[in-house]
Image 1: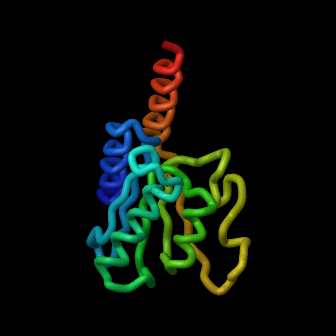
Image 2 (image 1 turned 30 degrees about the vertical axis):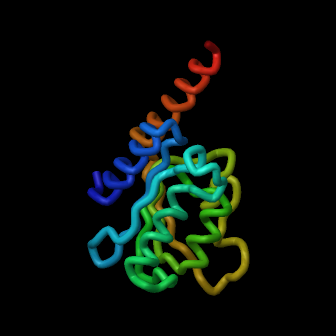
Length: 150
């Protein structure tokens, strides 16, 4: 398994331990992780606290530049439209995705950010179809349903 994707999985585990939807993300430039993030929507009471947005903010601070040209983003679950728009806006070159998001995915599952304007920046996308990511998400929601049944 790709070591950078493994780092994204570690970030997802952080979300899981916080009882957040377990999504993790890292951003890489020139072989170095420059940004990290995991979901904190419940903890921060903020719908924008997705893993991808945390990682984008962290990477932009690292580079002292909002343009993340030449970067690759690794994420355990396909980004939603909000995150996909931020990825495109920040000019990230490539996204490596662990699991498909069949309800909100914006890199081809429900819609594709590359089909929306502006058209001058295309984000390359690779789906890994990773069992570990899918299992983490399924287990999280199974536990959540079991806890709410009590």
